[in-house]
Image: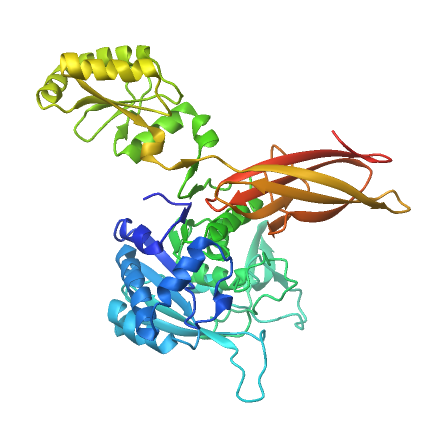
Length: 513
């Protein structure tokens, strides 16, 4: 199973394709049963379609929509695995009885957690609703993971007379030395939080974690859940990735992860969030979209592209690159595959391939010819007239079929968006600081979704968003004297992106270098 992966698509179909018992922990925060327009947060096609699907009927339709997804989650959980389902008062009773109890069994309910917060509106007509429910169920309650030492809180010992220190987890201890070695004496064992959590507040509008996602959950909430019910190296799945908090925290805590969402913007914002927290030893991750950028595929590492496109085609790539007669892989029946990461493939490729497939396995070649099956497949971005004519001649004159397959028949390919940037100097203060206006204009056949900016762009470090979400493409910046590198990306409705790097020099005036 591929992990550390963001996947754009319907989580039901993606879950169905996953292997059974491969995930250690699932957290899901599905759209609440409120039938309110504020549930449509990103506003792109995928999210709107999902909103309409689950609201085609009333509560029964919603529960059916959610239940078939949770059923797949139950299947992919390992026997030691746990699921945390986050919901509010609109449907919590239905979710518990009709979904979780039926799929996991009442005896496998571990906790009904109450997350309390103080944000949101007030009322003079009823007690304000200031909590969410988080249902914790185990696949098998006797085998569940519960790392109590990871989530304990420790008492304040600051009033004690003896010198007191604290370690990285907040434990208070005293230390003694014997034979040159330090011995720590912990003053208490800490307390496991109760099942009502009042110590983790919802994010306020000014919180540093804020990325512009209205229902964004605090990292502290996810940290408690992930630490409690998984270990380093375990696989954490969030099938409604939203603002990306689950996978961002899982990544920080050295867990493997999978994030799924039907919204292009949710996937791309989460990707930007992960990029921003990248460190030297961070594990790499991939993003799976509906369409792939032609330039990225066309100019990718040749061997990596060969392996990837063969896998997408349903074949198996060669582990070695030498002594293979130029053949890069094979189909399940061993029929050879050759990949050319090029356009306008000529006749010479056909001639060489024809000779290679005969030499590689004479019996298979003869069998395929007798059964009128392809003796081999050539994958490329496009084929020239000479190649097409030679394949036609071989089939007509020698009864030999070679199948030419363009990459866009295997995976959908699109052109990435383009972007231009206009720079206007607005003002200058007494210290020589210049205020400038940057206006980005993106062009895409799929339609532009949003822009994102890096005001301290470093090519070696890569793009790290200073402004993650900008729907207008307009930003103001104050620049001191010196050189400044500013990068802006445009993201389109397919999730593809274009980038422009602006190199500015401020010295009496603002100049583009």
